[in-house]
Length: 343
Image (cartoon, rainbow, N blue to C red; front, side, top):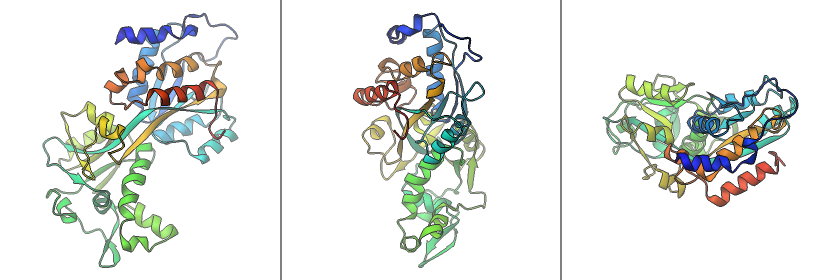
C-alpha cells in the first residue's frame, strides 16, 4: 500500500518543485467541517504530508458540515479556511453568503459515498427498523385515531410488536451536522409523510409535525462527533445512536447495527443503492486560495487518485465507498477546469 501511495505522489510533478513567488503569510492548508469526512481527510492529510515534502501537512478539524461551511464562507485570506468537508451538498444560501464575503469560486469535490446507520450496544437485541418506526419513536406528536396526540411510546415494542421490549432513547446528531439533514430527509420525513393524518397537513403545520421532536429525554441531540454518540451508548444501555457507516465499521466490536427496510448497511448494499439511507461525501475548495496557500491543488489531486480513494485504497479500508473510475475522473476534470458551484 505504501508503494502504491508513493507512486501516486510521484505522478504529480509539482510535488518535487521548489515553491516560488511571493512569501505566504500562511503555508499550511486549513480544513474544517464534517465529522463523517474527518477520518478520511485526516488519513489523506497525513499521507500527503509524507509523500509531498515540498508542502506542510494540512491541518484538519471538525465542527460539522454546517460549521465548516460557515467558516469557509467567512471570506478569503489567511484567517479563513481553505477547504470545508461536508456530508451533504452546499446550500444555495451558503453560496450566497460566500459570494457576499468575496469567496466566489467554490469548487465542489465529491470523494465517495457513505451510509447513515442506526446502532446500539453490541449486547442489545437486533432492531429491524422502518422509517415510520423511527418517526414514531422521536416525534413530539404521533398520529392516533385520526388526530395527532402527544407521543405515548416509551418502548420500541409499543410501536410495533416486531421490535424489542427496549426503552426508547435515540441519540441523533445536532443541527450542525450534515448527517442530521440526511437523517431527517431520508428517514424522518419519509416515515412522517406515510400517515394519512399528516398527509392532510400543509406548509408550516406539515413541517412542524414532521420535525418537532419529543422533549422528554428520549431524544438526545449531540453537537460533537460520533465518539460522543458512542459514549452516550456506553452510558445509556438502551440507547440507539445514529452514525456514519465508516464509524460503525471501525467500532463493530462495540456496536450492533440495525436493518432499515429489511436491508443491512454495508459497503456493498450502499454502493448498489439497495440500502436506503446513503449519501455522497464532499469537500469544497476555495478557488481564490489556490496558488496562494501552497499545496491545495496537489492535495485535491492526491485525494482523488485511485491509490488514495479508489477500490483497495486506504480510504476504502477506513469505510469510504469509492466512486467508479469514470465518476472520479469526471470530478477531477471539473476541479482542474475550475468549475465553480452554480456554473
